[in-house]
Image (tube, rainbow, N blue to C red):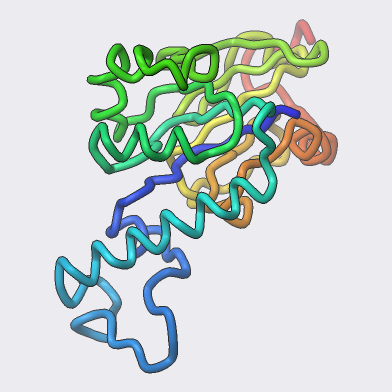
Length: 214
């Protein structure tokens, strides 16, 4: 099967705060922040602990759905960890990975040549750049970390999949675009078939001169 995902932000403590992920506290007696507004961590140690626990949970959720031979398109912001963390994650996560760059992919982008030299990643890892147009089961899809208003063949029912916004960008029922970030889909990748069902509920309406041609 083929899956899409984005914005995993493995090992990133502050994404728990920014995206309000359910990893702030592990039990009712856990004191985790220094004020009631939940804007700061008590300590760096607590932040690292929660980021590690989040990462372990996300990896477990991922592997419960994605099988080793499945394909995963990751649309940016993979991890805030360094190269050892990238290698460790890719060795544990199921699936053959195809990466689109996000704005927080410095480590994996800078050391992609090193990563590709690892024998265990041969044929499993591919870097697609900032944007990629693909075709799956005759469906045209534009992949990018960022949401677009128009894209190639958008007026001919091509999809656009993106991340970056963590569910804060309102979904447009008249656009065949979708945020595939984990914050929008119960913290797991979403399958090609699931995307298709969500797109089928939309009524595409062109927003530019292509309306006259579609």
